[in-house]
Each structure stands twice: as structure tokens, then as C-alpha cells.
Length: 362
View 1 (cartoon, rainbow, N blue to C red):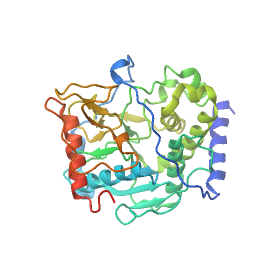
View 2 (cartoon, one colour):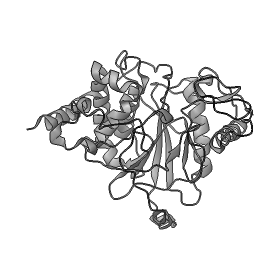
View 3 (cartoon, rainbow, N blue to C red):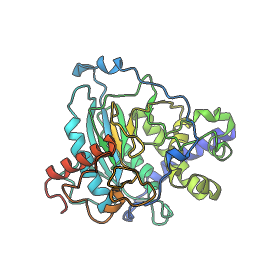
View 4 (cartoon, rainbow, N blue to C red):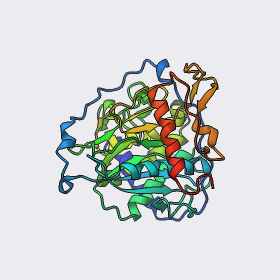
């Protein structure tokens, strides 16, 4: 047996054993780290496959819809919770819209205990990793939470959209997957070719070319439920193995878990349609256009003339990290004239959600 197949078998065996025990430690605070600047990178991703628009039109009749279940992991921190509430508000707004194939929704809460928003957001309680195992990198709880949910929950839909709290859905989402492939957003900073020597520790040569690893994270991804059940335990254990290896940890930093998902998907032979119109990331993406999700991971800083001041706190700003211990207030001030449509839309959508969600700020 080749070393790649031995590694894969070991991962699956270990994951089955790990699933059996109970974890009782609570979740940590949200991870706060800086993010890369796309404009400073010369990275080119693998070819992006465009999704034919006519495919969604063929699914107009309810009987033909391929529904997917939207799932997002979260801690019980204030920081994660207000984002989850905004995200779920917009999910409900578009769930039954034209061309939507959005089925059910689950917040996978990896705090190990219920919170006061259980009645507001459909929630599954997952246990966090044992104390110290995440080494301060709380994102490692994400794959472990998905393993538990997939093992225990009764998921009706045959497909799953993995989403995140800092996603805002801007229009109804069809099932973008096709022919056994997942559908995923390509990230410019996920570079399997550049890090081939590191990735070969987890994806040996007998598993195929390094280009089999797609430049994706786990979110946003639409993937078959049965495929994800196979991917999730491998994703979890590759994440843990990468974090324990100093060379890998240094190479990948805060995107380590994203690389781990891409590797796990490739190890299971699940390829992905690289769908660049899946989402936008303000302030770098300036137009909403035909995108489905706004991902507000970057801070938006501008002077009062509408000029971007990235790297410097602006006279006007919206940054989710400003609200790590308290939710944003209702009726945030809109950006000054000249700020791109994407940022204006983001703030307006946050404002609409907070204006209509009961007991906001409590």
C-alpha cells in the first residue's frame, strides 16, 4: 500500500475513534487576525469554471429543485452571535425567492451548551475540541463541529452549503453544484502549487498532481451531503496534523484550516466548480452585480471624500472587529459619497437586519 493511502486510512480510523468520546470544555473568543490584501498579490488561481446561467432556469418547478441545507459554525461569543443573527435574517428573506434552492438552515454552535438564541435560529449543539487541542486557533473547532453534526443530525436535503457568520446573502441561491462536483469560491491566497512541498506531507504524489487540490476553503461550498460525510473527518484530522507541524503552521497561518479542507476534498476525489461569482469581499470587490453573498471579512475604511484608506483607520469605517464585545448599533451611518456600491449595500443590509431583529443588542 502506498504511503498516501496509508495516511488516508489512518486519518479515517482516527476520526471514527475521536467521534466516540464526549467533550465538555466551552468555546474560546473569536479569532482576530489581519487579512491579506488582494491588490498586493500576483497570485493566479486555477482556471475558473463559469456556471451556465441556463442551468438554474431548468429548476423553476419545485418538484425539480435540488435543495441544499445551509450550515454555519459559530461560537457563543457576542462577536459570532450578532453576525449569525444578521446572516439568518437575510437567509429567511431569500429562502423562498425566485430560483432559490435553499432548504433548511442550521447554526452549528460549538460551545457545548445552548444559548438564548435557540428559538430565533435553528441550532445544533456541538462540543468544542478538548482544552488546548486548538492551540488558540479556534477555527479548528469548525471541522470537528461539522463531523458531529453530520453524524448526529437528521439532514433532509441531499446537498449542503457551508456558510459563515460574516456572510450576507444578497439574492436567492440556486444549487450551483453539478455532476458530482462541489461548487466553491476560489480564493486568490490559496496556492497549492506554491506550497507543493508542504502539501505533499498530506497529499502524497501517489494521490495525483498537486493541481487536484482546489484553491478553496470550506466556505462557501455547496457539496453533496454524502460526499461531505466522507470529507469532514479527514478535514478535521488534516487540520489537526497541519497545526501540529511547525513548518505547515508557519506556511499557512490563519488559512490553515482552509488548506486542510481543500486537501480533504482532494483525498476523497471530490472536485469543485470554481465559481468566482459566488461572493464578493468588500472593499476590494466594488460591485454586487450577480453575486450571491457578501463576505465582510475585511475592514472598510474611507475618508470623507470616499477614498479607501486600507491599513489606516478611516474617518468613516465599518469593520466587524469593532464589535467583538458588543453588537453594532442600529442605524449605522452610511458611507460618504464615492464609496463603492458593495460597501454601501453591506451597511444598508446590516441596518435593515438590526432594525427588524427583535431585541437587538440584548
